[in-house]
Length: 454
Ligand code: TRP
Image (tube, protein in one colour):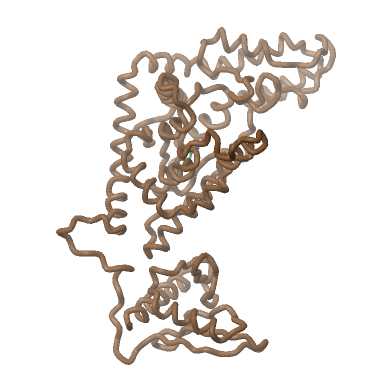
């Protein structure tokens, strides 16, 4: 199966050169790989959290869609859609909201930063914080989990959100005793340098130091490049390429030989004015053909609309059955169909053949127990307890809970059993993954069998 790679772009701004180099160009390149199924979407529900400027959001959606398409995204090949065209996303958001712990959301960086700022200013901690901002990570988790994405290319600031998506997916899987969701991983592109802006700091709208990608055409591109801050060395004086935002930007657009030649020219005293002209020409060579496509697309919103609707259809072909299955699992099913049995199918107990617990005392005097399968194989070893009562209580709980009620943490060669977020027992180490999986199936069956006894 191909790796499913998914990412969203919040539609509040106009793409600049930093977005292009840092996100758009690498993502479009990755989407052409044969072993990748790429999903890109306009995160316009997320945009509502950041902005109530409808005209801005509307314009940004159009600009971002046109930019990605102009940069070479092939909508036949990738699934390219708008978040707000997928009603399954807000539906799944609610399912995940109901299992998201408030404490986890309290720890989300964006929310915490807002609270810290309020506190520093002597305001109410939650002043000006919308519930939308608070729920941001859950909506993002739904974006990802609805499509079973394996990898999510994001900036470092988003890693925590991916971890929360994993956490929510895992919690749901464990609560309902099945692998309903793929657990996603953040994909951080180490090689992609962040592009410096006009003042040498990271290029970002919030620093007001950006160079436009398409907006304003070649003229504004050139004007912005002329405003890049340089030192005051005169033509003829050697320049330090490694201390120059201009050189760093050049390198992001040039091949090795061209970069080496530019470096040499700066060392030999190329004037900043000429260097800027060279940079402008280098960027314009890459951007001009895209700009032409961009302008044609912007002039034809109906074409973009049609592409996005087709994308939504492709995306919903995955999300609709997925969310329908979740509705069943959660008890939101039609009353005319068979009722769900809590915890899924139970293994029918065979009389006289039951898994059993065996308690013992550790060499250091603490109390533990093992769980054996009906045919005598060791399935679990509990953690040690200071008191036999505590070991007994855990035994009782494991004997009645059923597999769906415990969290099973699958490790490379063993499986840990968690209750209330704490590991309380573990399987032995197995020789390989398949052996571990077989033991895991036995463990599940044994827990269900015990639970079916009473
Ligand atoms: N929060 C992301 C950002 O600001 C945008 C986003 C929304 C996203 N949903 C997503 C990214 C899902 C990856 C996957 O950059």
